[in-house]
Length: 389
Ligand code: TGC
Ligand code: FAD
Image (cartoon, rainbow, N blue to C red):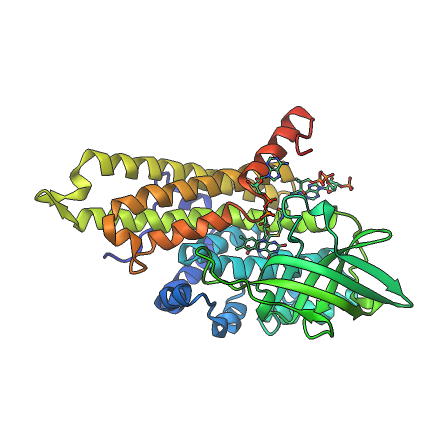
């Protein structure tokens, strides 16, 4: 198969700055050299290559938009988007690892934390010396996190946490967990060290999607944390939902990366594969699949780019992200399904990447708000009427 060549049908590279393209290309080369050789083995084993965490830190992809004084790189949101695109072109598990660290762990500490919390944790998280996870979802409260049962009770100056979180990316490989819990005064976020007494993170096994990513439950049984563990500057569901807006933004770009990988593979395969004495690419039906995919990917690129420029200009609002996450995940899942078919039987082996991307996208279209939850959020914005309840 030929080396990766990214589809750029509308010459969108013209729309990026030199610095944005340089970061994209650096991350692309790293993914090719360091991640692609091991992805199949890890996906099959159901593990993430943890030895790469310090390299990801050195690459500057953990919280790249966080200011340099806290260990970040102070990059633009569009640059962050391109990073997510390149990582997810490798695998959704790789982008998830990075999104959770940057958007769901570093972001709440940066946006809602005290100065001491920022100075203590952000540099370690940026370098990959510490890994974090984000515990919002519970067994009975996924789409409706406002119903959470996990509690935080005051005991003198301390807090006592009790409850269960479920489907937590990086839960079993983290040093800290951002845990959202119901206190008397409303929902609060806590930085919980994972070696605290009463905290455990049993792994959730047997996934057939996002296999190169560890997913765990978080069990909190009378976990005692000091007052200084609470994120002081936010209260209520808008705290965790504000983090989700950041992570969903990265997914808009990541989903494009996954679809680009499938397109590149199907295009090169169809040119090499001979059926009925001529290349598969010379038949009308595969050409329609490729034309549809190229069009859908290009529209997804435009959407991600526009939302990214709006975010950098301070104009992006949550409903813009609802549309971009919803559209780009659905586009990427459909593209992977359609192009998997172009590879015939080879499409169901891990020797090729499209089937792996197709399975991964079933998680990506579900987490960070399901397709239908984003549909309802757009509906609410358009009509002013919430149809969730
Ligand atoms: P609602 O009454 O609408 O809102 C409560 C408060 O939150 C504010 N708000 C937001 N703030 C920031 N960003 C957003 N996107 C926001 N959406 C709402 C809202 O203004 C309000 O503020 P205030 O000041 O009035 O209190 O809340 P609701 O209970 O009706 O819920 C709305 C709904 C259903 C849209 C929301 O709960 C939702 O988004 N559900 C989906 C849950 C979800 O996405 N979970 C993701 C878990 S994390 C994850 O999946 C990580 S995967 C990681 C990986 O591996 O990449
Ligand atoms: P449910 O809420 O039970 O939804 C089931 C179905 O009902 C869906 O089709 C949904 O769209 C539909 N539905 C729900 N409510 C409505 C409604 N009002 N109207 C119409 N239809 C509705 N969570 C974290 O907190 N941290 C993580 O790191 C994390 N990582 C994850 C990693 C993976 C691999 C996966 C798969 C999930 C992860 N999640 C994480 C959880 C994820 O956010 C939830 O799975 C997701 O929000 C959906 O919740 P649920 O699974 O409980 O589905």
